[in-house]
Image 1 (cartoon, rainbow, N blue to C red):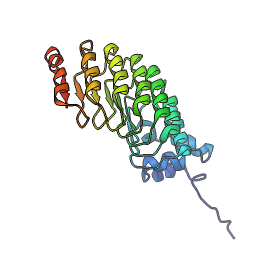
Image 2 (image 1 turned 90 degrees about the horizontal axis):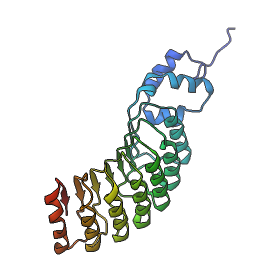
Image 3 (image 1 turned 60 degrees about the vertical axis):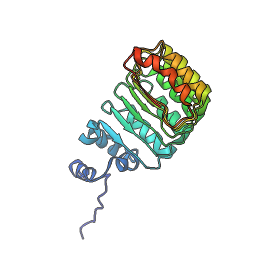
Image 4 (image 1 turned 180 degrees about the vertical axis):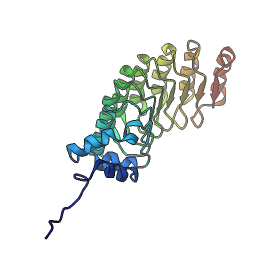
Length: 252
């Protein structure tokens, strides 16, 4: 009697494995197919969709620490991804640490979207370190995290040493005047940031004045969004002079 042979991903011809991969989304490929065995890892590295991906969207998935490690391994061996979107993925501070460390010397990523991820003070510190070392990232979306004033101080320190970031989104992070003061100091010296989104924070009149003062020195910021903060009408007027000097749009 002929011996029965069981076929799996470990023994199938490469062409058939490719056909199976064609039916899977990138989330499944990254987190279920990597590190199964050496043969499958080799096949994945040769798989065209895996090689050529430029935008990786993993929005709304629960990415625990083990999956973050898989993602980091993928990013360290990838030279095509320019946009990484991980919004609402629950990566937290520890996941942010792994991600930020992996991207410090990345040469292709320009857009990092990690909004809605429960990132706090410690995560902000890791991201600040990323800003100090990475030379390609231009857009960083951190909306609706838990960064607060102290985390914003870390990010501001990173901005002081960064020469590529053009868009920074910090809406809904519990930022008050102290954090705004740190950002204002960074803005006096930063020469690349074009858009700064600070909507839905707790910035009051004093914080608005810090930012208005910074605009006397900054000549590159084109959009500053302060909507839904606690800035009184008389404090809003402090932006009028600066808005006449440069093509700056301040949303209040």
